[in-house]
Structures are given as C-alpha cells and as structure tokens.
Length: 311
Image (cartoon, rainbow, N blue to C red; front, side):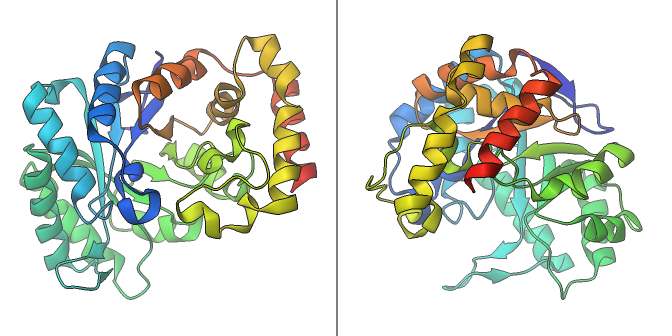
C-alpha cells in the first residue's frame, strides 16, 4: 500500500480510503456487519489506514458501528478517522445546520459514537448558503483549540466556495465526486486544490459500481440505483460496453476493471486518496492493488475518451 501526505497536514494516508456510506440503510439496504467488520480487519492487514464516514450515514449508524469496532478490536491507533457534519437529525426530519452551536454539538455526538477523543479530519458535508463561513470557521477553531479535531476539510464545495472559506480558516482537504464518468471537478476544483496544496479524497470512485463492469441491462439493484437513469436500459448498456473496452489496458497493467478505474482516479496529480465503499473482505483485498502505481498519460487519456464517448 502506498501512502501520501494529506494536503499540508501531518497525516500520511493510504491511497485507498475505506468508505462507510454503505452503512446507510435507506440508500443501500442492510449490510451484514460481520462481513463489514471482517473487511476492516482485512484493511488493516493490507495497510489501509484511512477511514471516511459521516454522522449522516444512517443517522449515526455508520459512526456507531465503526466506534464499536474500534473499541472491540482496540485498533484506534491503526486508522486516521475522517467524518462529516452538516445534517441536523436531532428532530424527526433532518435539515442542514452549520451554525456554531450545532457544529459543536455534532462534533461531541460524533466523538461519542466513534468512541474516540479526537477526529483527525472533520469535514463540512456540503455548502450551506445561509450560514456565514466565518461562523463555521469559528466553530472549527474552537474544536481545534479543545483538541477534539485536528484538521478541517470540505465536501462537495466548488472552488469559489473554498476561496470564501479560506478567508477565515485553513482547508486541508476537499472531498468531491470524481471518477471516469463524473469529471466535473477537473476544470476548476482540482487545479485549485493543486495550487493551494489542498488534499483531495474522491468519493464514488467507481461511480457506484458502474465502472466495475459487473452489470447488464435489466439488472435489479435493489437500492437507490434503481431510480437512477444511468443504471437503466440503453444508458447502462452503452456504459458497460465502454467499460469492457477498457479490458486490454487493464490486462497490460495486470489489473481488473475496477482496479483500473481506481488507478485512473489516483493518477490525477491532485488526488490524494480514493474512497471505496467496502462491504466484504474480498472487496478490499481485490481493490487494494489499484494503489500500487499510476497509469501512463496515454492510457489515462485513452480511458477518459472511451468513457466520454459512451455518455
């Protein structure tokens, strides 16, 4: 497993990040926790030292499950933990809340669920148009002063929104949607992060499985993907045909198609780590080799063109 510095922090993170969005039942259904715990143990064996979660994943369920694992296995020191705040789910219906007071409460709640004393990377989950950035910055400054948070990151923000935050606080990491299909951040956000030395940890690095090459038209996903047009009919057939045309390049590197798609993400110079949602030990064992190198410029662009032509 390769490691790299996250932005300007002192965190050396694995290039594969163990994501926890899959522990959101309303999106993904029930995930067997015994297999998920076994996957975390396998991740340790493979050298994965970076976990990303959020308080909103299952309204605390993902954090609580991770906290129970860390406590039972006594392995807090084996992982750098990133989590997020944004959604206030203290009432029946969750709403965005990035006020100073709520951020402090959200952090305390995350620490309790995770059963840890310090969050390594605390991220705002999305842009809140009605909260002043200096208020968010003040809350983060207080948490850092108290030793409850080490570094601050953002998720799903654009370059202009990051510039505004940088007037009041340091940003050490951006978590954007980025993969061979979803490349919108290449124009502004990734160059901005390179220029500012802001780390980048990508989510949906396999486009929720579209880049795995596993699915055929008519497949029933049994989760939120059944409502997405990209996972239906001709769109799915066209994309899967393009993914399978990637096979000769995968073979040349000795990689599977999912490994190749992750290596494509990791080849971008702005990208620090690729988040992959893992449910079983076999999945993390299969995907880990993607972090062992990068692609040539020719192959990177060839793959990008293959997928762009199928969209």
